[in-house]
Image (cartoon, rainbow, N blue to C red; front, side, top):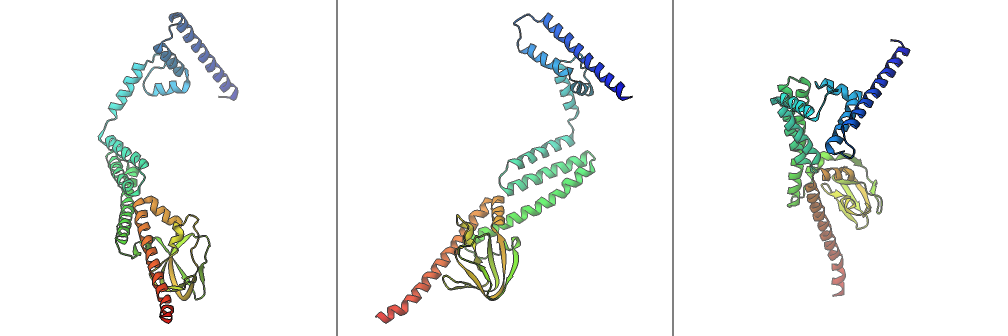
Length: 299
């Protein structure tokens, strides 16, 4: 077909469409008394206007309906017939899986989200097997162990954080989320008032808090208070006095872990509070020891 013939065909179809719409409007004007525009007549007009659309007419034909003689009852009965025809065991599993998937979008914490996602993946995998859809079956079957591993990691993290809050001051549970960094003698890790963006855990070496002249050995947290302060500023200056290694974790990563499970945030707050109380107690002992010689000389 040439371009000219295509244009003529479009024009003819458009004129037929206008002619048909005019006939329908004329019939409505003849059969409907003035002022009787009730809900049913309005719905009929909407239906007639919809069937005049070529795309909607094509959809109606695909559904097995006649665009020239369509009613709401015919549409409802046809949809009900299609629905009943497609009620199969595989589709029922897919429907339940879709329900669990929607539930994951409404959850705010990671642990129940992972559980719901795993159940949904199981139902979708069964759907793929029953419908002989290999790609769907393999996809959701692979997602099951991935979600299981992530769920196990999160439960392990919360469990260890709980133990830390109950008095176990070990920070081992946080190491998988940290990165390694090395310092040499004389290096300054950070200074008082610097912007704080990460927390550090000492592994080897020695470090000095210059403002209070306190040495920090292996297994100690540094920079955790900057995470809790409103302006995220360093509360002291720390210098490396013996070559060592530290593990670091950014505050953004800590926030990510917190939002994945807010319970972890509570345990971390308790842990940092305990360490703060330890620092206060240590400073009080140093202050008492420093005052003792002066008191003895006075006596």
